Length: 336
Image 1 (tube, rainbow, N blue to C red):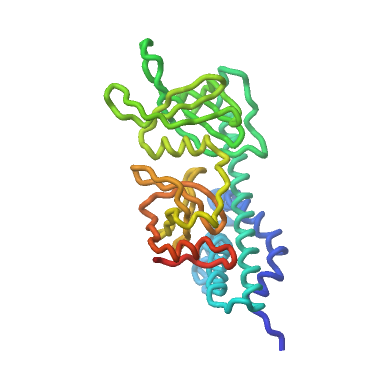
Image 2 (image 1 turned 180 degrees about the vertical axis):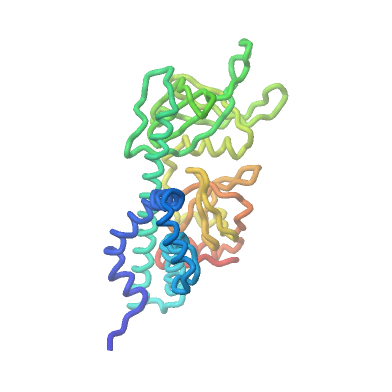
Protein backbone atom coordinates (compact mmCIF):
# COMPACT_ATOMS: atom_id res chain seq x y z
CA UNK A 1 0.00 0.00 0.00
CA UNK A 2 1.36 3.42 -0.95
CA UNK A 3 1.68 5.93 1.88
CA UNK A 4 1.97 9.62 1.11
CA UNK A 5 1.08 12.93 2.74
CA UNK A 6 0.02 16.39 1.61
CA UNK A 7 3.63 17.51 1.99
CA UNK A 8 4.87 14.65 -0.24
CA UNK A 9 2.45 15.75 -2.97
CA UNK A 10 3.56 19.39 -2.70
CA UNK A 11 7.26 18.49 -2.88
CA UNK A 12 6.69 16.19 -5.86
CA UNK A 13 4.55 18.55 -7.95
CA UNK A 14 5.35 22.13 -6.87
CA UNK A 15 7.98 22.86 -9.52
CA UNK A 16 5.77 21.62 -12.36
CA UNK A 17 2.71 23.39 -10.95
CA UNK A 18 4.63 26.68 -10.74
CA UNK A 19 5.03 26.82 -14.54
CA UNK A 20 1.24 27.13 -14.84
CA UNK A 21 0.36 28.92 -11.62
CA UNK A 22 2.69 31.93 -11.83
CA UNK A 23 1.59 32.94 -15.37
CA UNK A 24 -2.07 32.44 -14.35
CA UNK A 25 -1.73 34.90 -11.49
CA UNK A 26 0.39 37.31 -13.52
CA UNK A 27 -2.24 37.53 -16.25
CA UNK A 28 -5.25 37.59 -13.94
CA UNK A 29 -5.97 41.28 -14.47
CA UNK A 30 -6.08 40.75 -18.26
CA UNK A 31 -8.24 37.67 -17.76
CA UNK A 32 -10.69 39.65 -15.66
CA UNK A 33 -10.78 42.51 -18.18
CA UNK A 34 -11.40 40.07 -21.05
CA UNK A 35 -14.18 38.35 -19.11
CA UNK A 36 -15.88 41.68 -18.38
CA UNK A 37 -15.56 42.81 -22.01
CA UNK A 38 -17.13 39.58 -23.27
CA UNK A 39 -19.97 39.88 -20.74
CA UNK A 40 -20.65 43.45 -21.88
CA UNK A 41 -20.25 43.00 -25.64
CA UNK A 42 -21.04 39.34 -26.48
CA UNK A 43 -24.65 38.45 -25.67
CA UNK A 44 -24.16 34.81 -26.68
CA UNK A 45 -21.25 34.44 -24.27
CA UNK A 46 -23.25 36.13 -21.53
CA UNK A 47 -26.25 33.80 -22.00
CA UNK A 48 -24.07 30.67 -21.81
CA UNK A 49 -22.25 31.88 -18.68
CA UNK A 50 -25.51 32.80 -16.93
CA UNK A 51 -26.99 29.39 -17.83
CA UNK A 52 -23.96 27.60 -16.39
CA UNK A 53 -24.05 29.74 -13.24
CA UNK A 54 -27.66 28.63 -12.60
CA UNK A 55 -26.66 24.97 -12.81
CA UNK A 56 -26.56 22.89 -9.58
CA UNK A 57 -23.29 21.40 -10.88
CA UNK A 58 -21.72 24.84 -10.39
CA UNK A 59 -23.51 25.20 -7.04
CA UNK A 60 -25.11 28.33 -8.54
CA UNK A 61 -21.85 30.22 -8.03
CA UNK A 62 -20.66 32.97 -10.41
CA UNK A 63 -17.81 32.17 -12.80
CA UNK A 64 -15.64 34.81 -11.14
CA UNK A 65 -15.68 32.85 -7.87
CA UNK A 66 -14.01 29.93 -9.69
CA UNK A 67 -11.46 32.17 -11.39
CA UNK A 68 -10.16 33.45 -8.06
CA UNK A 69 -9.97 30.03 -6.37
CA UNK A 70 -6.26 29.59 -7.22
CA UNK A 71 -5.51 32.77 -5.24
CA UNK A 72 -7.44 31.60 -2.20
CA UNK A 73 -6.36 27.97 -2.15
CA UNK A 74 -2.62 28.53 -2.23
CA UNK A 75 -2.91 30.65 0.92
CA UNK A 76 -5.01 27.98 2.63
CA UNK A 77 -2.52 25.27 1.64
CA UNK A 78 0.30 27.35 3.12
CA UNK A 79 -1.60 27.68 6.42
CA UNK A 80 -2.29 23.94 6.40
CA UNK A 81 1.40 23.10 5.95
CA UNK A 82 2.41 25.60 8.63
CA UNK A 83 0.16 23.75 11.06
CA UNK A 84 1.56 20.40 9.93
CA UNK A 85 5.07 21.68 10.71
CA UNK A 86 3.90 22.89 14.10
CA UNK A 87 2.41 19.51 15.01
CA UNK A 88 5.07 17.21 13.53
CA UNK A 89 7.61 15.60 15.85
CA UNK A 90 11.02 17.25 15.63
CA UNK A 91 13.92 15.33 14.12
CA UNK A 92 11.72 13.04 12.00
CA UNK A 93 11.65 12.50 8.24
CA UNK A 94 8.10 13.84 8.27
CA UNK A 95 9.32 17.12 9.74
CA UNK A 96 12.05 17.45 7.08
CA UNK A 97 9.48 16.87 4.32
CA UNK A 98 6.97 19.29 5.88
CA UNK A 99 9.55 22.08 6.20
CA UNK A 100 10.67 21.45 2.61
CA UNK A 101 7.05 21.69 1.41
CA UNK A 102 6.50 24.92 3.33
CA UNK A 103 9.63 26.52 1.86
CA UNK A 104 8.56 25.50 -1.65
CA UNK A 105 5.14 27.09 -1.10
CA UNK A 106 6.68 30.28 0.29
CA UNK A 107 8.97 30.48 -2.74
CA UNK A 108 6.03 29.89 -5.10
CA UNK A 109 3.97 32.64 -3.46
CA UNK A 110 6.94 35.02 -3.52
CA UNK A 111 7.65 34.37 -7.21
CA UNK A 112 3.98 34.93 -7.99
CA UNK A 113 3.95 38.22 -6.09
CA UNK A 114 7.17 39.34 -7.79
CA UNK A 115 5.79 38.51 -11.24
CA UNK A 116 2.52 40.35 -10.55
CA UNK A 117 4.44 43.35 -9.20
CA UNK A 118 6.66 43.48 -12.29
CA UNK A 119 3.66 43.33 -14.63
CA UNK A 120 1.86 46.10 -12.74
CA UNK A 121 5.05 48.18 -12.70
CA UNK A 122 5.39 48.02 -16.48
CA UNK A 123 1.72 48.94 -16.92
CA UNK A 124 2.05 51.94 -14.60
CA UNK A 125 5.27 53.07 -16.33
CA UNK A 126 3.58 52.96 -19.74
CA UNK A 127 0.65 54.96 -18.34
CA UNK A 128 2.91 57.50 -16.62
CA UNK A 129 5.10 57.88 -19.72
CA UNK A 130 2.04 59.08 -21.66
CA UNK A 131 1.26 61.72 -19.02
CA UNK A 132 4.71 63.22 -18.48
CA UNK A 133 6.44 66.21 -20.05
CA UNK A 134 10.07 67.08 -19.29
CA UNK A 135 11.31 70.58 -18.57
CA UNK A 136 14.73 69.07 -17.92
CA UNK A 137 16.68 66.39 -19.80
CA UNK A 138 14.31 63.63 -20.98
CA UNK A 139 14.50 60.28 -19.21
CA UNK A 140 13.02 57.16 -20.89
CA UNK A 141 10.64 55.77 -18.28
CA UNK A 142 9.61 52.30 -19.45
CA UNK A 143 12.07 49.63 -18.33
CA UNK A 144 11.69 45.95 -17.40
CA UNK A 145 13.82 46.43 -14.27
CA UNK A 146 12.24 49.68 -13.03
CA UNK A 147 9.61 49.56 -10.30
CA UNK A 148 7.86 52.20 -8.23
CA UNK A 149 8.94 52.44 -4.58
CA UNK A 150 6.80 55.39 -3.48
CA UNK A 151 4.92 58.34 -4.98
CA UNK A 152 2.95 61.29 -3.70
CA UNK A 153 2.74 65.06 -3.18
CA UNK A 154 4.97 67.02 -0.82
CA UNK A 155 5.40 70.74 -0.18
CA UNK A 156 8.69 72.38 -1.10
CA UNK A 157 9.65 75.20 1.26
CA UNK A 158 11.13 77.93 -0.94
CA UNK A 159 13.54 80.79 -0.26
CA UNK A 160 11.70 83.14 2.09
CA UNK A 161 12.98 86.15 0.14
CA UNK A 162 10.76 85.07 -2.76
CA UNK A 163 7.12 86.03 -3.19
CA UNK A 164 6.04 82.38 -3.19
CA UNK A 165 7.47 80.76 -0.06
CA UNK A 166 6.22 77.25 -0.85
CA UNK A 167 4.91 75.16 -3.72
CA UNK A 168 3.39 71.72 -4.16
CA UNK A 169 5.60 69.19 -5.95
CA UNK A 170 5.08 65.52 -6.77
CA UNK A 171 7.67 62.80 -6.23
CA UNK A 172 7.90 59.52 -8.14
CA UNK A 173 10.58 57.39 -6.47
CA UNK A 174 11.63 54.32 -8.46
CA UNK A 175 14.23 51.74 -7.51
CA UNK A 176 16.74 53.51 -9.76
CA UNK A 177 15.54 57.13 -10.26
CA UNK A 178 13.59 59.93 -8.61
CA UNK A 179 11.35 62.29 -10.60
CA UNK A 180 10.51 65.72 -9.17
CA UNK A 181 7.43 67.11 -10.92
CA UNK A 182 4.74 69.75 -10.92
CA UNK A 183 1.24 68.30 -10.95
CA UNK A 184 -0.85 69.55 -13.88
CA UNK A 185 -4.53 69.22 -14.79
CA UNK A 186 -5.83 65.94 -16.14
CA UNK A 187 -3.37 63.81 -14.18
CA UNK A 188 -0.37 65.10 -16.13
CA UNK A 189 3.07 65.95 -14.74
CA UNK A 190 5.86 68.30 -15.76
CA UNK A 191 9.20 66.90 -14.61
CA UNK A 192 11.44 69.72 -13.39
CA UNK A 193 14.31 67.55 -12.13
CA UNK A 194 15.39 63.93 -11.79
CA UNK A 195 18.32 62.07 -10.27
CA UNK A 196 19.57 58.49 -9.85
CA UNK A 197 18.85 57.06 -6.40
CA UNK A 198 22.57 56.50 -5.85
CA UNK A 199 22.92 60.29 -5.62
CA UNK A 200 19.97 60.84 -3.25
CA UNK A 201 20.11 61.39 0.49
CA UNK A 202 17.27 62.22 2.88
CA UNK A 203 17.60 63.45 6.45
CA UNK A 204 15.17 64.34 9.18
CA UNK A 205 14.86 68.06 9.87
CA UNK A 206 13.68 69.15 13.31
CA UNK A 207 13.11 72.88 12.98
CA UNK A 208 10.16 75.22 13.46
CA UNK A 209 8.86 77.42 10.69
CA UNK A 210 6.60 80.37 11.52
CA UNK A 211 6.48 79.03 15.12
CA UNK A 212 4.84 75.81 13.85
CA UNK A 213 6.31 72.33 14.13
CA UNK A 214 6.10 70.94 10.59
CA UNK A 215 6.94 67.49 9.26
CA UNK A 216 10.11 68.57 7.50
CA UNK A 217 12.90 66.61 5.86
CA UNK A 218 15.78 67.57 3.63
CA UNK A 219 16.28 65.86 0.28
CA UNK A 220 19.72 66.12 -1.33
CA UNK A 221 19.90 65.61 -5.10
CA UNK A 222 22.01 66.95 -7.97
CA UNK A 223 24.30 68.91 -5.62
CA UNK A 224 21.41 70.82 -4.06
CA UNK A 225 19.13 70.35 -1.07
CA UNK A 226 15.36 70.73 -0.98
CA UNK A 227 13.47 71.42 2.24
CA UNK A 228 10.25 69.40 2.01
CA UNK A 229 7.17 69.20 4.21
CA UNK A 230 4.52 66.48 4.50
CA UNK A 231 1.04 66.45 6.01
CA UNK A 232 1.86 63.80 8.61
CA UNK A 233 4.86 62.43 10.46
CA UNK A 234 4.15 59.03 8.92
CA UNK A 235 4.53 60.43 5.40
CA UNK A 236 7.82 62.08 6.35
CA UNK A 237 9.29 58.91 7.88
CA UNK A 238 8.11 56.82 4.93
CA UNK A 239 9.82 59.15 2.45
CA UNK A 240 13.06 59.14 4.43
CA UNK A 241 13.00 55.34 4.68
CA UNK A 242 12.18 54.91 0.97
CA UNK A 243 15.03 57.19 -0.13
CA UNK A 244 17.45 55.50 2.30
CA UNK A 245 17.27 52.09 0.59
CA UNK A 246 18.92 49.64 0.64
CA UNK A 247 18.56 49.30 4.39
CA UNK A 248 21.36 47.85 6.55
CA UNK A 249 21.47 44.06 6.82
CA UNK A 250 19.90 42.86 10.08
CA UNK A 251 21.52 40.23 12.30
CA UNK A 252 18.34 38.51 13.49
CA UNK A 253 20.16 36.39 16.06
CA UNK A 254 21.05 39.60 17.92
CA UNK A 255 17.62 41.26 17.73
CA UNK A 256 15.85 39.52 20.61
CA UNK A 257 15.40 42.74 22.59
CA UNK A 258 13.81 44.59 19.69
CA UNK A 259 10.07 45.13 19.60
CA UNK A 260 8.05 42.48 17.78
CA UNK A 261 4.42 42.87 16.80
CA UNK A 262 1.88 40.31 15.62
CA UNK A 263 -0.85 40.94 13.08
CA UNK A 264 -4.29 40.65 14.70
CA UNK A 265 -6.23 41.76 11.60
CA UNK A 266 -5.12 41.08 8.03
CA UNK A 267 -3.84 44.08 6.06
CA UNK A 268 -3.54 44.41 2.27
CA UNK A 269 -0.93 46.87 1.01
CA UNK A 270 -2.20 49.74 -1.16
CA UNK A 271 1.14 51.48 -1.76
CA UNK A 272 4.45 49.94 -2.89
CA UNK A 273 6.16 50.73 0.44
CA UNK A 274 3.42 49.09 2.51
CA UNK A 275 3.62 45.53 3.85
CA UNK A 276 0.71 43.11 3.48
CA UNK A 277 0.19 40.91 6.52
CA UNK A 278 -1.92 37.85 7.23
CA UNK A 279 -3.36 37.31 10.67
CA UNK A 280 -0.74 35.90 13.12
CA UNK A 281 2.27 36.99 11.03
CA UNK A 282 5.04 38.68 13.02
CA UNK A 283 7.18 41.72 12.21
CA UNK A 284 10.36 43.07 13.75
CA UNK A 285 9.70 46.77 14.40
CA UNK A 286 12.14 49.41 13.12
CA UNK A 287 10.19 52.60 13.80
CA UNK A 288 6.71 53.96 14.51
CA UNK A 289 5.07 57.25 13.59
CA UNK A 290 2.88 59.39 15.81
CA UNK A 291 -0.03 59.00 13.38
CA UNK A 292 -0.23 55.22 13.63
CA UNK A 293 2.15 53.63 11.09
CA UNK A 294 4.74 50.96 11.89
CA UNK A 295 7.75 50.07 9.75
CA UNK A 296 8.80 46.48 10.21
CA UNK A 297 10.36 43.40 8.65
CA UNK A 298 8.12 40.37 8.21
CA UNK A 299 9.97 37.49 9.87
CA UNK A 300 8.57 34.81 7.55
CA UNK A 301 10.35 36.16 4.46
CA UNK A 302 12.38 39.22 5.62
CA UNK A 303 10.31 41.68 3.56
CA UNK A 304 10.20 45.22 4.91
CA UNK A 305 7.43 47.81 4.77
CA UNK A 306 4.79 49.88 6.58
CA UNK A 307 1.61 48.61 8.25
CA UNK A 308 -1.09 50.45 10.26
CA UNK A 309 -0.56 50.05 14.00
CA UNK A 310 -4.29 49.32 14.37
CA UNK A 311 -3.68 45.91 12.73
CA UNK A 312 -0.90 44.97 15.16
CA UNK A 313 -0.29 44.11 18.78
CA UNK A 314 3.02 44.02 20.66
CA UNK A 315 4.50 40.68 21.75
CA UNK A 316 5.59 41.12 25.36
CA UNK A 317 7.30 37.81 26.17
CA UNK A 318 11.08 37.64 25.64
CA UNK A 319 10.85 33.85 25.33
CA UNK A 320 8.34 34.14 22.49
CA UNK A 321 10.43 36.80 20.72
CA UNK A 322 13.47 34.52 20.91
CA UNK A 323 11.47 31.61 19.49
CA UNK A 324 10.18 33.77 16.62
CA UNK A 325 13.78 34.60 15.66
CA UNK A 326 14.96 30.97 15.82
CA UNK A 327 16.02 29.96 12.27
CA UNK A 328 16.26 26.22 12.90
CA UNK A 329 12.54 25.42 12.67
CA UNK A 330 9.90 27.60 10.98
CA UNK A 331 7.06 28.14 13.43
CA UNK A 332 3.90 30.18 13.67
CA UNK A 333 4.27 33.01 16.16
CA UNK A 334 2.74 32.86 19.62
CA UNK A 335 1.53 35.44 22.06
CA UNK A 336 3.44 36.24 25.20
